[in-house]
Image (cartoon, rainbow, N blue to C red; front, side, top):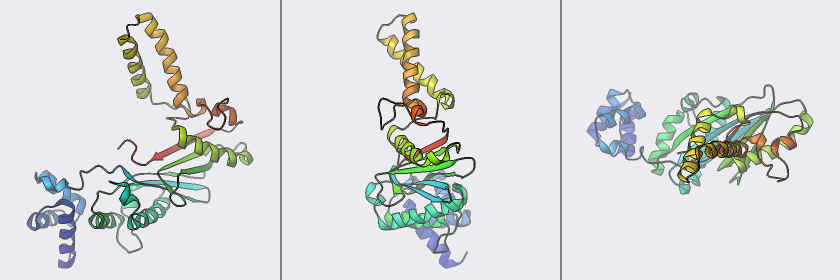
Length: 282
């Protein structure tokens, strides 16, 4: 590493951590110039300032979708404030990252190690952007939908630009009735964005979620003074209601409350779906 590169890395590390020059140089030397490992090194040494920006909560930001030849990629990049999410440099970074995400089929490690237009790696540009803007920025998650065995459709809720927003949903449908798929696919993606189902059907629901919900229902009924036999009977009904409300095919269709989603599928099978809401669960 040249002296120029060394000094540049020390500068980045100081801006990110607030740690003095000497400790930053030691961290850079010990970790062969890797900024992330250097931050970890400083934190392990017990230098409190090392997590100054990195420990903040990044729960704002943007979600982006990219489409080509029936394939779709999704990526979420987080910032600390919505103000930064509207920053031109942040948006430009996110757009280029969305293209890189698509080209790397949503593989986060490959994305971070890819070169951007300025010939620098994504992870190094990320550090530069954090230094420039002064907020924690993270590449949170990504996903890729190929065009095999089905058709993909997406919906961006309240898009700030084409393919950029705060809520994006993607749904993959079987090809049995392909001519009908487009209209239904887009409407289903809209439904998913609005109704936030947990799974396609009961069999896809995580058993831990069901067990936890049943535990909550029974505790609530027990605290209300219900007898054990009544608790068992009522809890089954409440759990079935929870399943209906949170599984896609059993949900009430948002465009016609007299129908369920299963009623409008007309022989089409939902293979999978994903819904990204920026900051959800952070």
